[in-house]
Length: 125
Image 1 (cartoon, rainbow, N blue to C red):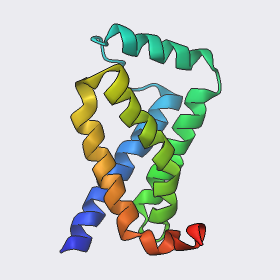
Image 2: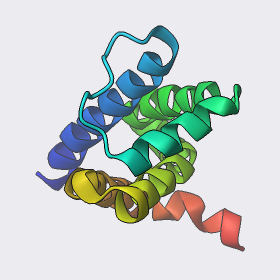
Image 3: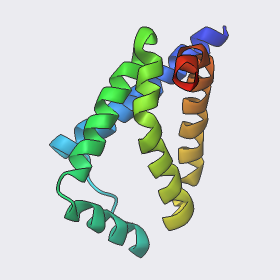
Image 4: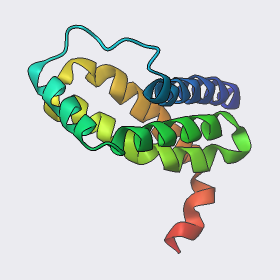
């Protein structure tokens, strides 16, 4: 039962990140109209660095696809980890309106990484 729940959560998590990554290239989802001043300034600063959003989008797309596939889930989680840290930081420091969703995603990512901890052991030896 636990593996089925993890699979469903990993599937939804991966699809969400793959969608967010694709949106950075295709711009099919509109920006929210009500954004705080601080969040808007941060987003504009990120757009000043022309290669940053495509890099984040590529990481989200590749990581999301890899998280969906059980065999490559551990690698996908590692790819998404720095993006997730950035999402958490933005939602704790800049604008806390999306903190609950960011925390939920971070918990799912933590569970995915915990379940694949045996694959990470060689990194730390």
